[in-house]
Image (cartoon, rainbow, N blue to C red; front, side, top):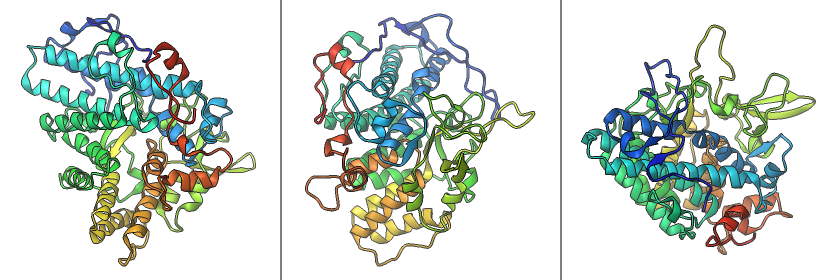
Length: 475
């Protein structure tokens, strides 16, 4: 199924760390493991088990997938443009992805399944342990189940039906057939509701760099929204919004700082600079570059021009910059590209989930249930911060849903493939079983677009290794 091997007694490459932070200001440097650690030994005590679970936050497969999981769907949605010459990247820009695409094979499939395999190994170790305190066992179980749900969320959105390994059995998992997407979604919901039940609102690490109960609620709200379970989506978003833990930053320029009260969950970096801003090689890509150079990835003119005049996000989160006689729309949600003189660390990490999305989840769920006034109020909360006028209170439900879609596009651009997934999951205005991707991307790329492009291909190398895997339509 995928190229990832975990011995039943060994977690290969497990990263161990005594703690994530020594204080709120400085991340403890986490070195690579020097030995392989048996499951029984790794989960023998609260301290070693916690260190083992921290490995999934810091694993190379996790971090190497961060930028591509935003970049590739962003290219598919004509939200982002890649300025680095790459045949593999260009296939996303034209929605003409081949079954041998190296990014699909190595990153979107390979890295995510590596993370999933590590999560299953950890859940097995935690469940078998008889020496962990109940509080630590609950916390670690909840964290890993959220991680597994997060990983499965991206797999099912990118590929549809996918193999669904939920046990630490590499030999069995290597020959799994694709499970129906409905089963994958059901597993995601089971994991997140189970995490809800065992986690608390307290963050186990400084600066919200580990998962708490509201992290599970926030992801669950998104999942319910995608599954059209409107009442459940509203309830989960309500839990986050009404928890009292979070608030919107009035200053857009501080939204992505690691002390932002809008952040629900973020991944720490050793430098205090986001991966989105300091990974400048052609393979990883970045939203920034050295002065005078073109960033690997920028916003498309199409998306930039779709933002309303006066939108503060257009000036705070985008810099229209002339480079070499051409204007590029540089994404500046994260502000730090290098450390100030004399500083040992920056103040930005990698934001995974934030509060603004929860207002937009609740707005869409309310609109779908006929609570137009409540939906408008939620959208207006986001628009007010962006310096925009309030919505017309007489909007009809169809027009309000389009307004929510527009607001999601303006608020969440460049983040985690949200625009692509929104286009894929939303029915076409014209109906006929099509999606908004047909309406929008089909109109932009009529010569290369096909409705089947809403799913990426199953990598050919995986199908050779595991003949039980079928291929998506259109490939």
